[in-house]
Amino acid sequence: MIDFRSDTVTKPTEEMRKAAYLAMVGDDVYGEDPTVNQLEKIAAEILGKEAALFVTSGTQGNQIAVLTHCRPGNEIILEEESHIFYYESGAVSAFAGVQTRTIKGFRGAMSPDLVEGAIRGEDQHYPETGLICLENTHNRAGGAVLPLENMKQIYDIAERHNIPVHMDGARLFNAVAATKRDVKEFTQYCDTVQICLSKGLGAPVGSILAGNKEFIQKARKWRKRLGGGLRQVGMIAAPGLVALTTMRDRLSEDHENAQLLASGLASISGIKVVNEVDTNIVVIDVSELNMNSTTFVEKLKEKEILAGTFGSNLVRFVTHFNVSTENIKRALQIITTL
Image: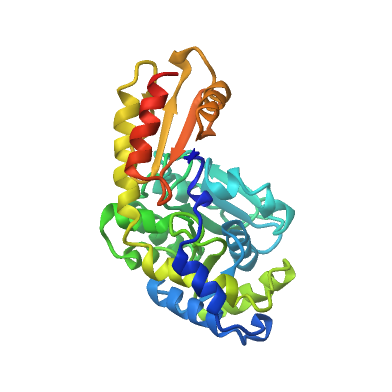
């Protein structure tokens, strides 16, 4: 199978498996797991934040951020197709008791003017704006990189209004690889950030939430409340440490493969590539093939290619380190015959 469904399907490398086996462990709830402590320290340094917290998933990291920043009855501002709004099962309302104020973005980027206009003034009729959320790269915008200037403008607005900014950076290192910038150039424009270790970086499980020391201390309690306080978790953190320290630089290979895939797909009659391919995501429209996305994906599966529906006529392909250039070429040959 050539699996383009997501970069979450990556298998841990041999180095990651050995690291898990050999990991020094302790009870992390007591703060005694040396591997977790090392991962959190290195992650905070890389991300330019005072402290970090190892969490089980990107969704958990995002939800802990909302719970820590906000109180029930607050409102959060976020892009209308952001992961927190679109793919996290309404958790911000179910757990944090906050409501969402969504803004239509352009390639995932919200207009700073619209963001400022959405901030609530002091009035007993309105919820207080408790948080502004950004997503970089933006999944439903086809892996688009949010421009640094856009992030800066929104962060400056947030500072003027004393509102924190959280960045869902599940694929932040893809943005780093695409722009050839240091990750701190992105994280300087948010108060907190969540990154996934289990997507393009290839770890089997886990994410990092980073911010200042006071925030992380409070976030640790929210992690416990959500059942995320783990014990000898160094066996899971060790592959994450390998992922964070050795897998970032190779993400550009996935981007090159995505460009190759997009170019090949665009040359096939009836297929239209609908996103600007900044990173490792390619989205196509198959409506001119006289089939919907579900049928197209089923036909691919019959040929041992896996992809994901992204709407009634849209199909998403995601490149990662378990998809080689030869896999791309083979997949294009097969798709041509559908």
